Length: 227
Image (cartoon, rainbow, N blue to C red; front, top):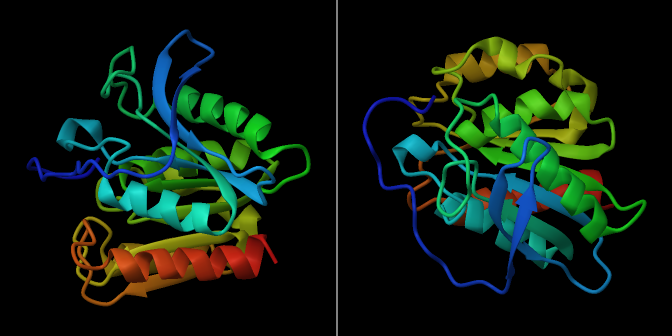
């Protein structure tokens, strides 16, 4: 989904989290990390980029999202898709990975507590899987799609997102060839109430742009979901 080549996605970063596992409905065990304050304001599941191109839950964008949400007092859960890292199973091109997201959301709900807003976020391949799963989960208070790979996936993967209205945030870089401006504009046409934030000069990997990425997510979450 993310295009040719094998860019270096992974970067281990030390943050305050606990290692755990999540079991899916089809018996796959997912390696995961969670962080939950004593009284979380909500919770977020964060989905990583394409594992066949080096993507995993230690990707810098994924870690940045977890850090920002944690600073807002939100419980965070990031995980490795099936076949990635120490997760069992094999890569399933976005199909079986939907079970992974559902299982992560179930775990997140127990972490965040009853009545707390639940968010689903994804970066690149993770954004495509999140976009497919999200419309089937009315309990979600918001969805964040970072650099959705619009040039690499069927547009149907992003259907039905307009139901989230301004609770949908789409972020992309102005120099992202995998989420090109024209494709992003077409997606916005089908989700006119969504917040679309373009980070000037950012490419698909947000090299040197992790700070504005986090600030955009934080401002949207505080204004739209946690206010």
